[in-house]
Length: 194
Image (cartoon, rainbow, N blue to C red):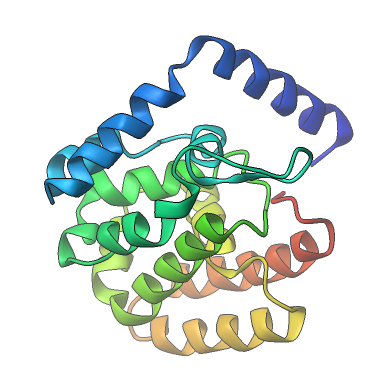
């Protein structure tokens, strides 16, 4: 990501949060989680990476937890706790987190990375079907998000494992996995998805 794009993203994020009621989002998530209402939880779940970080993240500059930082593990485990996570509506939310994604070592981001990687590893048929309706770039972004943040050797190992898993399902997925692997390795060096 160029410095200009990154600067534009930061300014856009600041403007977004001056008008977006993050507290309302967090309240809706907490209520849905407490009621174990999966549909309401998915509806309230952020569909933008910046909102996700403002709800579940950590402000390292000021050493402050965001609103639901302490609940992130339980909430994200809840999101991934059922096969309903494979519904297009939920996968679209996860895909949207990969847009303008900047890898962060906050716990919540790592929980999403782990969850998306597990979906890819354990549900190749359903994930291939979902990705068949997405552009190559969308698929690469999702795959890259699932791989980023780990050491380059680990990215290569996971990428190779996914390539072997997806070979019987889709030549397209194999090609896009290879691209995502290279990008994830590069992005891990800078912590920004390209």
